[in-house]
Length: 397
Image 1 (cartoon, rainbow, N blue to C red):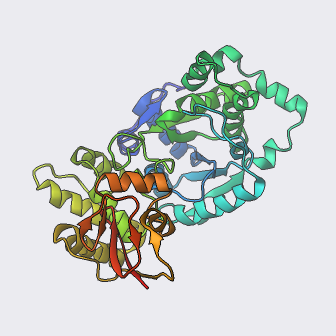
Image 2 (tube, helix red, strand yellow):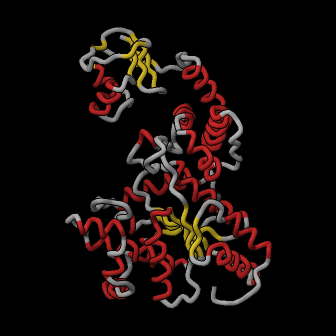
Image 3 (cartoon, rainbow, N blue to C red):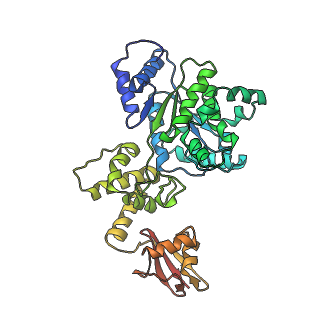
């Protein structure tokens, strides 16, 4: 805070609600309350920035944590600024990465961005957001401009990043272009005049760099940063990521899969999922199974609709709890006999033969209700195939 003023209780309460479950830097709730009060008194809405590097075409539940916070700011009348990383996505954020990421083409970025906004509109009013592409200013920078930007930090400061330091110690390559990623993201905050920037807890370095870059370019009251916790996937261990599709819950997930995956999370994750992903309150005195069903129903309803949520819940009760077979099981016609491994991949029940083998070894594949263990099993007649808890298919010849 650059001024000493008395912060009113209403803005402290607003800040408390907005920062529930997340870390706010610097100055925590008081710093945020100050910004909120100043915005009100000057009748100048806060500019709340979220950068999106559309490196993949779909979003998952982990992304909705920040989306729900953006919605809260919108409801208070502040301006959400969504930055499509047309330039930064072509490098790829090195945060947490053990190797240089492959670059994306301009066409891939544009296609993925369209998919992002379609999915974001389930939570955020995208029509009221200011949507910009950082390629519009970063691609126009001259070599001299880039040299000026690079002078805002030092190699020593960049090497403080844990991922860079670890890769350097292990002798893994670090491309010079990766050093520019946090600088480019920081310069975005200069261009859009960000008051607040959101990011996951793994983005701490990048977002703090944004404050440094803003001050370097003469902005006296730089952005605050709001760091959101990362949501673990269904295994309860690894953060939710499309890198681990078996533990990730995508917003484009089939309703039955979404509901089923939510029912598979460890009980210990329920309080976090309730707090960060819904408006419901977790009740630890209730039966854990009932609380998980309530959670699964609510989230499935939020992203696929109430009718689909009810269908998914009914299917779960029938198939998983009552050991039945789905009523809407899909039928696949085969002309020739096929090996079970090839069939599992062909049906997209597994991504590879290796994954199919592991699923069989773990007892996760059944034919007509009986577990199989033979990797050379040939399918040459009508069967009901089950892979995992939720994938069923009727194979006919």
